[in-house]
Image (cartoon, rainbow, N blue to C red; front, side):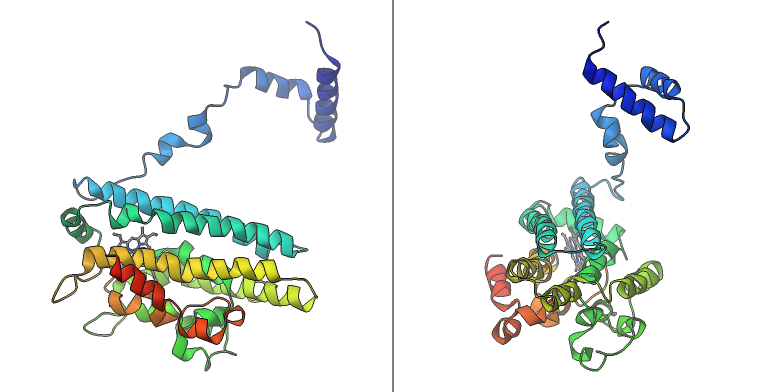
Length: 317
Ligand code: HEM
C-alpha cells in the first residue's frame, strides 16, 4: 500500500496529539478500525426524536398539536443558543451582534410564517376534545419563551406596564413579583393564581431570577447602550433589534392569538383556555405593550404598538 505524504503528515500530527496527552496512538487507531460508520439516524438521534410524541387521546390531530409545539421549542432552543453567544461574548462587536440577531430573527420569522399549521391545520371539533385531557398544561408554561425575553431586555421592561415606573430601581426579585405574565394567569372567577401559573413558578421561578441577574449588565438592551457609549455605529444593529422586537412582541404573539381566536372564540361566551387566563384581554400585544427597546421606537410607534396588526389579523379570520 502506498502511503502518500498527506497521510504521513496526518499520522505524524496524530502521533504528536496523542503523545502530548500521554496516550498510545495505536490503541486509538484500533478504535477507528473497529468502530461502526456513523449513520444519519444515529447522528441526529432520529429514533429518539420520533418516539417523543405521546398523545393523551386517540384523536389524530392531537399529534399535530404536540409536534408543532416540539418544533417551536427546538426553534426557541436555536434562538437561545444565539442569545448565549451574544451575551457571553468577551469582545462583542456590532458585526457579530447583527449576524447572530439575524439568525434569531430568521427563526422567529419561520415560526410566525408556519403558525398556519396550528390555525388551519387541525379540526376544531378534535381540538376542543383533546385539549380537555391536557388541563391545566398550557404553552403559557414555555420556559424557553420567557428566557429569550430575559436575554433580550432589561428585566424592568418585562414588568407589567403600570408597575414599570414604580419598580424601575427595584431588585430583580421584586420586579419578578410583577412580571407581566403573572397578571395573565389569574383565575377568571376568583382572581387567584391559576394552577398553571403556580406550577410554572415552582419549576422556573429561581431559574428566571438567576438568569435575570446574570443578564442585568449584558442583556441585548444593555449591550446596545454599551456599544453606543463606546462610539460604535449601531444603525444596522438597531434595524435588526427593531425586527426582533416586532417579531417577538407583535408578529409571533399575533399569529398565536389567531389560533386562540380560531379555536376558542364562541358567541356569546368565549371558551375557557386550558391555562385559565382571560385570553382575549391577555394575549393581544396592544394590551401588554411588551417592548424590548423603547429607546429605538418613536412615541407614535409605541402608542400604536400592535394595533394595526391586530386589526389586520382579526379581519382576516
Ligand atoms: C391551537 C393552538 C393554540 C392555542 C388555541 C393556544 C392558546 C393559548 C392561550 C389561550 C394562551 C393563554 C394562556 C392560557 O390560558 O392557556 C396561550 C398562551 C401561550 N401559548 Fe398558546 N396556543 C396554541 C398554540 C401554541 C403553540 C404552538 C405554542 C408554542 C410553544 C404556544 C405557546 C404559548 C405561549 C408562549 C403562551 C404565553 C403567551 C404570553 O404569555 O403572552 N401556543 N396559548
